[in-house]
Image 1 (cartoon, rainbow, N blue to C red):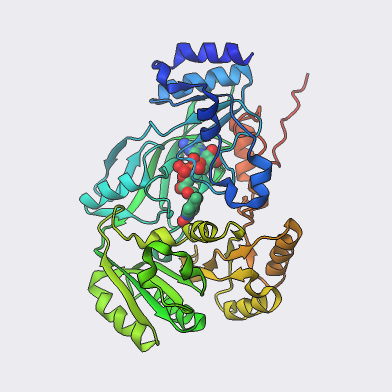
Image 2 (cartoon, rainbow, N blue to C red):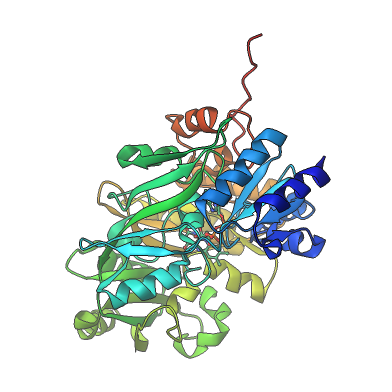
Length: 453
Ligand SMILES: Cc1cc2nc3c(=O)[nH]c(=O)nc-3n(C[C@H](O)[C@H](O)[C@H](O)COP(=O)(O)OP(=O)(O)OC[C@H]3O[C@@H](n4cnc5c(N)ncnc54)[C@H](O)[C@@H]3O)c2cc1C
């Protein structure tokens, strides 16, 4: 059956180099950074797709989908495979559709909207946008590698979110075209509120094929680090910058000690035993920021220009989910959580967590504007893993004290905590993928409808 499917694919895919069956290649294309989680590591290591195709056009993509639908073969989409939760790991084998060759930037409109294909790398878009006077409103710390389609389907926000919110906010994702897996696959335009049917749905209910992504006017940025004797000082200073609209900023991150000790390549910016703040601020405000940091008891330990994704050092490489990577490089027993702390009670929540879990949890805070325009401390704390029970105890405790947790140790949309309570993602799956072939097993509330005889 699979041999026949692969043979039929070879008639559709024009270049045999884009039809992949070598086991080592399939193993690579079947995995992402799921191993961040010791729990997902066990569950997903052996899950593989059976064949992979790299389409180069919507026409070819639709022909492949048509065949998969006719043959009842599962289809898992892949951008760059930098997701953290096994989002693109095929649970039921089948076809991997790698969209990384559909990477054209059609244009940037006069009002700053990038019109592009899903496989476009965010780093390439940032570079081109800045040449035209624009820049990404927000990007994950995997900027250089990750694709726009993968970001919209799997990510949530990142560097820039302190000013522009997350992907779901402020009309950043203007529209996209989506290929369906109906009996006759077709392209459907989603715009305005309809984007939320597909956004952050892990490729379970449609394939993004063309995207309208709003940019921001480019700013000349300066990167800075400041060390503070205590986490409290560093946190309060960083919050004061993040929450004050007078500061033009792209990044406001703070780490308690010993997290900065994990950052080997930028160890010159680190002071033993001290907390560290990482910021990107408009160059015109850099001097004022230095004075503000010093007035708050900090020491400026690095200052340098941001010249695009290839800047060295690129401070964003130590923020968002990259922080976890540095911790795991230092000691594989570290893992992480993804939390939303209270705007008003966060310091008390930190205290309660420290009291209960001691150094099993280390605080790494990012500031992000929410959809109501409030800048809130969201955190990606580093957590020492011992057992699944202990990890769940920590998650339960967080929730009991009002800390939101998007659990990164589960491999389904519903478990992660960002599944749409209004069910529009599920309704879209019922409509666009009634056979449940798109990334099966990741939207567990979906059940194939019995066909009335
Ligand atoms: C070190 C590290 C740091 C990270 N930092 C951040 C961060 O700051 N913010 C953040 O949001 N995320 C972050 N992530 C997660 C991830 O890197 C981003 O979300 C990234 O944008 C995903 O893009 P990708 O191309 O790698 O997608 P993939 O991992 O390939 O795919 C992600 C999901 O999207 C689906 N998908 C891919 N293409 C399409 C398409 N065309 N249509 C429909 N579905 C599709 C896949 O099936 C999968 O479910 C981080 C991950 C790591 C490992």
